[in-house]
Image (cartoon, rainbow, N blue to C red; front, side):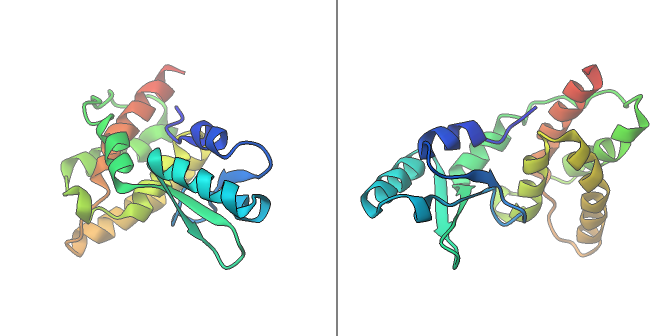
Length: 171
């Protein structure tokens, strides 16, 4: 399961620049397009990205941090809202992701209040099972702390995690 629109973004950028996942969870991707393209082409590419629901911010090192616009995030996570909770996983390695998904589903929060960094963190790792399995315990701890402090959880990710568990359990 790969919910990240990396192929779409790569097609919009075209050849001549790199595109990779951002190392931190403040954005989804990083590209060196501002260093590679002439100003006219860069403006055209930025307009095309914006029209497709991407937003870019320039770093001090002349890179773009590329993320989804809020409306596109809402659409992406809404697509998973009807995913059913999978049965209890037989594979014990999946238990932390299962526990996280159930916790998120049990504590819905309005979209505007959900922590975007945690939503990005989970979204970026759904296409990389080993990374999701590694990050799930830390996100679970963060969510437990958030609950104690009466802060909202990234509950929109519950359906996406249910879908991931369903697909992973079949493999």
